[in-house]
Image 1 (cartoon, helix red, strand yellow):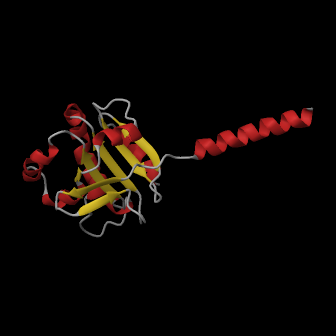
Image 2 (cartoon, one colour; image 1 turned 90 degrees about the vertical axis):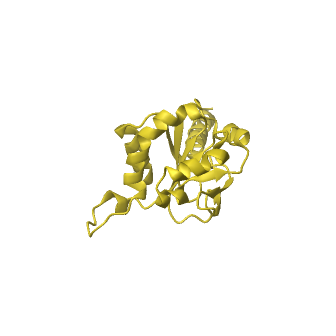
Image 3 (cartoon, one colour; image 1 turned 135 degrees about the vertical axis):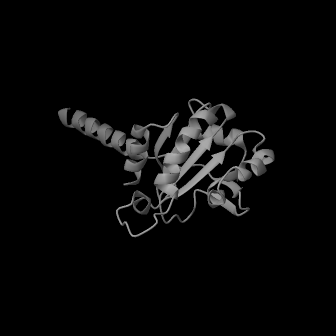
Length: 177
């Protein structure tokens, strides 16, 4: 009897550990960049980790703005010069921003006019059904921006949301390391 109890106990622990290690896959999302290039996420096969920022409502815009400069400087900007220890060289990731807000298709030209051209390849106008994406991603508060870190297989390894903080940026960076 003790052996059966021990076997059940150990198999329960092993099952829980396996389940805890299962990571959800980011849903397939189709769209095009502001440059006009068609894109499907997550990229397959991916050559590097991806960070996908999503804004579900315009009310998330204020908190999203707090992320723009730190995200750009950490994950998008390329170092000038020969400083091999520059963070931009170290974090070689794909970075995409997807505004899932109503009316973005109409506002895209205004957005392009107020955004650096080098960022147009990082902004995606989504063609996938927004309601379906919300059901799959299950945001707790769609009034906040979300940032998803995807591994090479498209699995979500980290999610942060809300206003920028160094602690949240650290979580993103640790997920990539």
